[in-house]
Image (tube, rainbow, N blue to C red):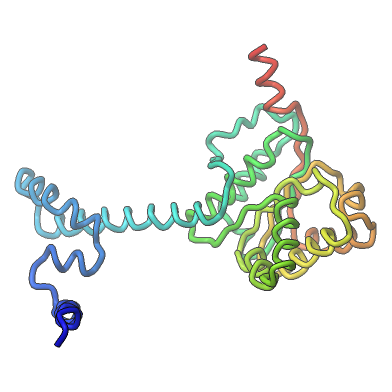
Length: 262
């Protein structure tokens, strides 16, 4: 038998053989955190005279916590947030108008089970994107599939996918997540093709998933974005049927910071 064939057979035999010691068993089960901290935990157990039950509990809980943190980090990375924002870092005293109780009620994520949408309306710089990411980050921690994208990027990606033949896959990437954050709707106008693409995403998500929309435009001005009052009305009808709206007002955080530095 060729030497390469012998190596392949031995590798297969090793995979078929069960682990013969604790370290190998932990490696086989991919309990890497438990494996890395086993010696330290056993040493602490001897010092503190911990029971076997306590040692096992400590190892399993630490492994579960590490696995949970790794999973959350993976979801957050896949969500595509431009930065990580949390509700603890939001200054509710900055916006002149912002219902704190409404925002905090969103953090229990009940709106997801109802397939409700959240609409954040206000001028640039008052914290709409911060709040949207904070709620979406909480959703990631709860195991919810989440996607963040600006309206302009969504249109650009869908247009590019039409050109290279990957449109069904790209469209599904925006429709499939239980939570989609559609940021900066209205900051840049879109042509008829772009408006149709946005409508497809929102229409397919209707009563199937939740969407958080941030916009600087009042509902009456959405016709400017979609180039058609008819299309804007159809989009609003689907977004607002099951939704909660938060109006924010005040000076831009960024403008205020520039003034403070000056």
